[in-house]
Length: 504
Image 1: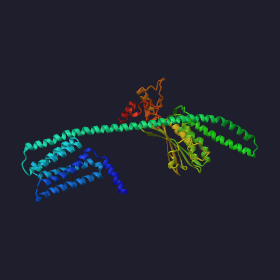
Image 2 (image 1 turned 45 degrees about the horizontal axis):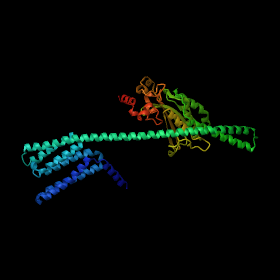
Image 3 (image 1 turned 180 degrees about the horizontal axis):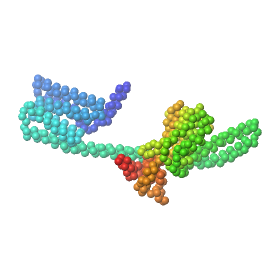
């Protein structure tokens, strides 16, 4: 069954690679033996002399079958196989011409067919080479029979070159036009796919924005009466006798109100539009502060907390409080994933993503891990693996939103039973880039002016890596001024300039 499927796939690959010139070659291989056999029947050649021609026809059929067997097995080597077949074809026409009168043979037309087909397939240069080879073979096919009529031979040979040159030039022009059309079609398909992707991204952003506004309004409306209920429940709990059943009920109310308040707090944090205040921050310092904040809790849980900070880490433009919140959420999740203790590593390093320098924070644990089928959902709002009441399901969603606001990325690798590694990547502009021409200065898009209508997250900190943090190559919202206008960073003159500089 597998061999049949493999043959089917190979046949589909063979068919998809067929061109008009391949049809010409196939027609030649069918018409040549059929025409020769018909000629043999109609020419009246005695049976005693027809044996050589039957042998030549069989020779042609055998090597033609071999050629197409090779084409079926090795479709990617089609040009080389056709080159091999040319040698056999020339020998075939040579045998026909040499056995039917040499220079006087009507089969010299076969050299014209070979020259025309190969000129059309390979182009003018190869066509001229085939014409020269055909002229030489034609000469030797008749030389052993009679002396050549040099005028007639020269005329026939010159027609080989007259066929090869214009057909080759025409073929080259058609091939160039075909490649240009295919390139334009591919570019059109890419543009359509890009437009669909951007449209889906904008629709998704609008839906999230509307959902965020609705969620924020609902959360505000719920928080006010919830605060009243929680306040009265706490007062009631304090006044009731210790062993009263009502005190237990009041305690349950207080606990559930506290849980709802945490959910509302996370919901508001996720739904509101971020107002971050970026500044140059020391990521290593932030990691050490996080390690100190969770050191006591880790000791209580039997967890070894290690901070491995990369030396001489450059400063990164981030909102320090939000970046710290993202790391804290991941650390808390890691602690919850190791109920029996384990190792928690906080690491920092530099990296590069799509040609953009990044500062990377890794939070690695040796906990229970995450099943592969759930990895795609862990960043969804309100999705949680924890038991009811143990979490809101918004911690990782908030982390992702914070990274998106910083035009960074969050990724996860996990092995069930062995642990997880969460990676936060923050793009940064090297110090030396601050003294180079920035994107808004080069393109004069207007974002650096007080009356600019465009919102651009590249300005003023990420001008030389705008396509990664705010353009069409970003995994988040498209906010670069030029990206909004052009729809594709590759069409931006600043991007083109930096690509050329990088190649140099």
